[in-house]
Image 1 (cartoon, one colour):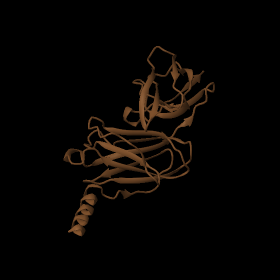
Image 2 (cartoon, rainbow, N blue to C red; image 1 turned 45 degrees about the horizontal axis):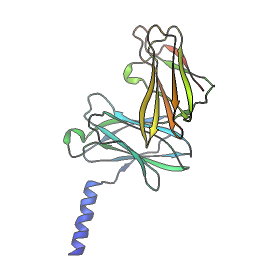
Image 3 (tube, helix red, strand yellow; image 1 turned 30 degrees about the vertical axis):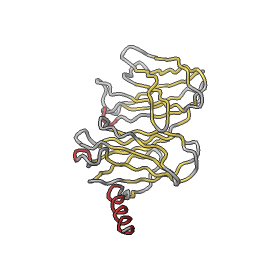
Image 4 (cartoon, one colour; image 1 turned 30 degrees about the horizontal axis):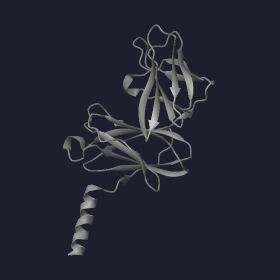
Length: 242
């Protein structure tokens, strides 16, 4: 009887926790597309270094997809972070500082697997290493106007423990650049402050206190300018001053 119960338990665990389907290894800055079938998990691997601050974003490949994606990250020992099972979200984003050199795995799955409308669909996964932002050293980023669906953030990271003034400047021809400052807690992003450009402002700034022992991220996203053709060059400068 005991052996029968153990066998049934193994079958049950296998049914509810399928082995993720392995995919080719990823590199920082890479985006890949994939597709989840019924009750599948898909796993990607990458090699990271200690103190790398990374951002993993998984989103629907198109607005027509019905998938509500979820994402988790693990090292060789344990799961480090995972997105919450929230059916109101159409994307999943994790961010964290790696604690060791070596291999990591990213698993993509569908939220609410028992509900057929969320079990399948195509997704786009992007793995990014955030560039270190040094207070007092402005960064300039050359970008292009693009359709909204093709816009990807540029990520920077800095440590808390001081008061900062963040400034976003643009040239006179630039519309709609947006900088958002996030704190990271247990793999999840919490938006703290935004610098949202308009048609009349040349520079935007905000003063804030960054909590000690906290990792912060800045994302800068260019928006489409209605009277500029996609592919038109422009640039902006982001600065952090203590």
